Length: 141
Length: 219
Image (cartoon, rainbow over all chains, first blue to last red; front, side):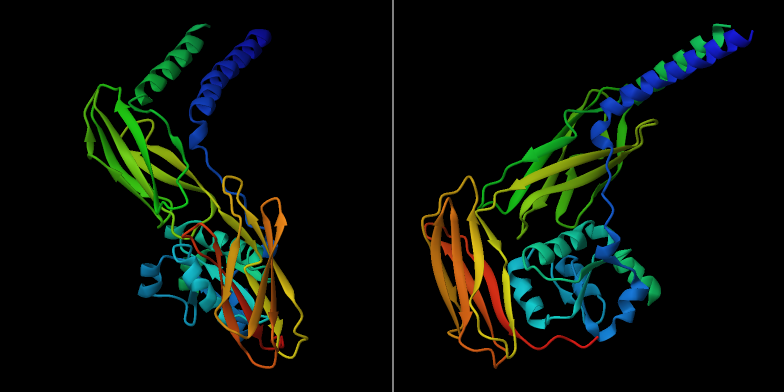
């Protein structure tokens, strides 16, 4: 009796595994994930506010969203008009200033991309992505 | 004793067949626009292989730079169609992966994620795009390295400084690599220059910035 129960349990597990494996293969393109931002490259809203005048806020959202509302004093820098907006940002930057880049859940990965380009292409230090983005800042407002 | 196993297997088979309604030709598309293209457009084709109509509840792009359109809201059984995803390239570079989430009223498979992978050709890789000298620093020469993308040929680079306060010199290093030497006349004043970098036979213009910045902020 004990043996038959074990065998039945194993068979059920195998039966469950078969469609699960099939689904994993068939729907492999639908599984998506993002690598987390390393803690050294992100900042929470509390910490970012505490930096005060030592930080420049960068809004990576599209122009329309920036025009609607943005963090006071933030500069617009998005990849739609990167070449045009970058010099304006660089004119405001000075050594020792921290850079906080944010986007919203609607503009997905934009802040990560903008931060990456500032670090890699412009070779700026102390560039951080705001955890929770625009929505997190709004909550704290 | 075999009854529960058979019932379990049957329930799996039934549930799998019930979800197979909207069949996608492909859920991932890779696009290779030219350097002159402003947009990249992917067509995600589908067919309703089920026996009941499928309704789109929402089609949502992961990014403001991507739009997605359905041809219709309802897909009758056997009908075909497509979702068009348009990615605005803007000043983006490299490989861009954007997704479109499609939600339908199918019982088992309500959400499908369509992936648009766009490989943007990069004619020039400029590193760094920003050079700065602190006010009062020695006006040393600094260097920008320019690498030509594999699929491009560039024989000469024209570099222009928007300000006469910065001198530039271009040197070809071979193997599709150039070196741009930049030097300010002095570092007393807070001045800036936009460096315009243009390959000889291209309309495309690239930019770098050179600046004299103020002293570091006291923290």
